[in-house]
Length: 423
Image (cartoon, rainbow, N blue to C red; front, top):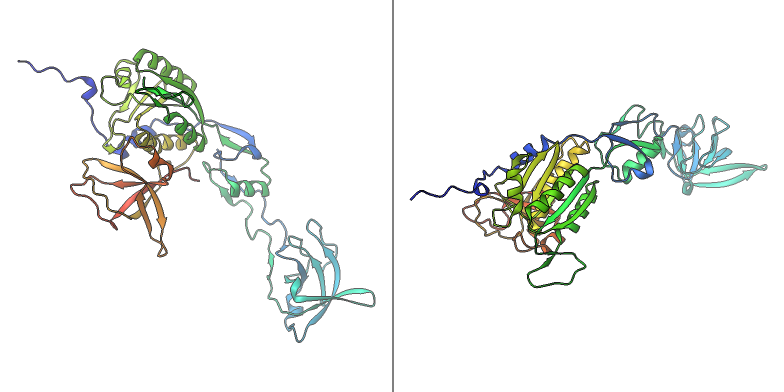
């Protein structure tokens, strides 16, 4: 008897995760830049390097309230033997000095105030006593200070022409402060990637719909929407589609036209109703991979059509979550100019035993903890099953467990993948 031919859906070659990432990123191009107001640049990525147009601070400034003076005048000052100096003027922040200091002279100065010519130090207010002589202001200095004390020199923080922020840098609070201080009221940032999201499965309900026999609410779409926004991209939600290949294909083609990346969930395995396999077998796109040597999410699939990327993730929430971080997020980072878009990996130790034996590498949702000795320990957030969504809630990393013939014991060294966006 002649054996039946093997269906195409079972003809899959499993790539290592690194090779799958390489193939995907090789097809990612940087998006064009656009200029936005600094107030609109939050969580955007810079499209060009930022250099300092001038030194910062641009003048010598005081680090505290006190008196600007010449350090040599108070070299012998102490509480028991104070030095008295004539006060020439008061210098609040934003006021330029009008009188240079000579021997035996000082100026009252506030935090951030501009030091007068001749001053090379500031003594804090608490170490002084104000007084008058003949109607003129004087001050007693009760402590000596070395040159440069309590002041910042021109360019002491930022030198003119210094590279401040590289292209691809995420604009956060610190970056916004630096940009503002250097006069960048507008900045060039990469356009936000648009990511179309389509959920497949006849079993799916909207979150607002009541439960029905055999049905579940669609949790993947809201999760992906949040992850996409966190990545600095714009979600284009196409809703859900039943297990109908023609209807799903029409929506996928629409999503590819409207977005820079199309993400689907569900229908990507080898079951009778896994429609993505049928769609990719008949359309005119190029499949980059359709199986990865990993758990969860081994049937994760990527394809290209018309220069647009399709990433088909598992319908299981845990696998969908893992697949997004390992593949979608690096692609979105690359679109926004990040030089090294792959997830950050770090060494850690297992806080609990991991008894599972596995043929493929596992990515286990986990929580990390830094112990007093500086070592990082990681523990799963729950049972390691791809269908579980509650394990996502507290996860801040993924534990990488290599293929094992026997489990890991507590304390075993492992590598972990940090979750979430980074600078």
